[in-house]
Length: 197
Image (cartoon, rainbow, N blue to C red; front, side, top):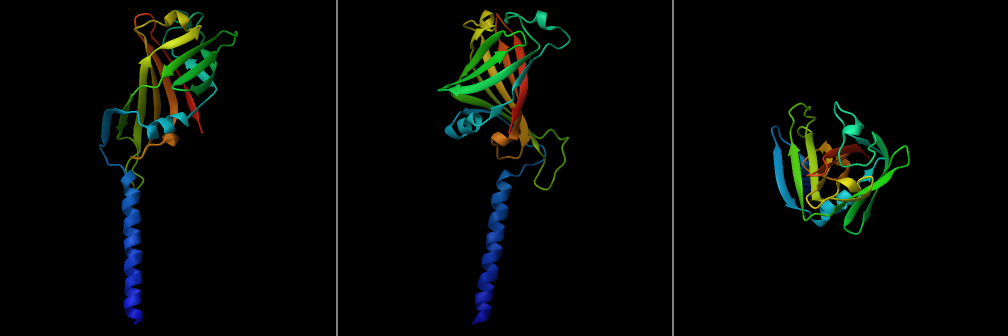
C-alpha cells in the first residue's frame, strides 16, 4: 500500500518541478533574440512606466559643441535639476538650471509604444540566456513652457526613451536610464539622465 503512495508522491514532486522550470523559462532568452515592434500602450505597460522614478539630474547633450549652440532652448544649460510627475495622461518633466531658469516639457500618453529588445551578443549567458538590451519609446507632439517655449511648434515631436536590460519578461526594474529627444523644424536637442529604484 505504501509503494503506490510513494510512487504517486514522487510523480507529483517531479511534475511540480517540471512545471516551475517551464514557468521560469517563459522569461528565458536566446542567443540572437530580437524583438522590434510597435504595440498598443496597454494598462500593464502604462503601470510599469508610471512606477519609474527619475533621478534628480538631467544633462543636455552637446557632443563636441557647447550649450550656446543648442537651438530651441532660451539660455540653455549643461545640467538641470529634474522632477517628473504624471498629471492625468501627461508626463510633466520640470527642469531648473543653476541660474534659476526653469521650464517644463510634457509628453502626452500616446496610444502605442515602440519596443526594442535585442541580444547584443556581448553579454554572458548565466544559465537562462543572455541579457537583452532594451528600449521602450514613447512619442507625442511636444508641449513645454519656460526656457523650452522657444522650441515648441506644431510639428515638434518629443520622444521619451527608457533604456536598460533584462530577460524576456520586461518590467520597470529593467530600466536604468532615460533619454528625451526633441525633434522638429524649430528645435533639435537631447536630454538624458538616470532612473532610480
